[in-house]
Length: 196
Image 1 (tube, rainbow, N blue to C red):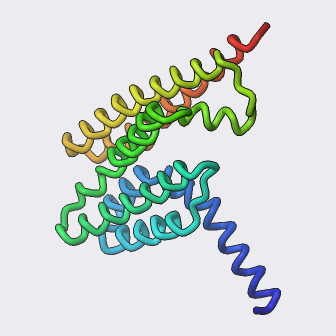
Image 2: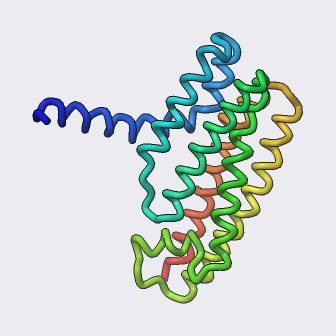
Image 3: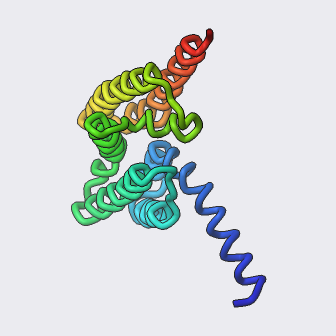
């Protein structure tokens, strides 16, 4: 293989690794715009390509995260194919619900492991986590579980309501703001607790 071709393949892979997360995050807006302007004949193939590329390029810091990332991509592919086969565009709206269910499963199951998911992530930067840090990370994991139950429930409500604009507003905007708010609050609390 020539150097030029190898470089081109590396460039495409790097682009896919960075562009695919953005595409998946923008899923609600993409579906809203796609259903409004293009229809399923254009939207479905684009979504399938995005999810397949995400499936092939996802790399997580932990095995659990890699499995989760691939499961998210598979859930997206299944929902798009189901939507096409049933000729029911509303199936596309259930992706945020599936993501919340998968995240809840990931965080909740880690509470029964030796280390919670948040503890494992914390140990990537601080391997010698003190006992109070272990208790704190377990509590944070529980809070995220509660968040995913609430967020997933409201995402399901927006699906059942059938208002695509409301669905896109919540799942493509408000939901991310709530995630950012929770992360920000947790960061502030963590910094305060770590002060001597």
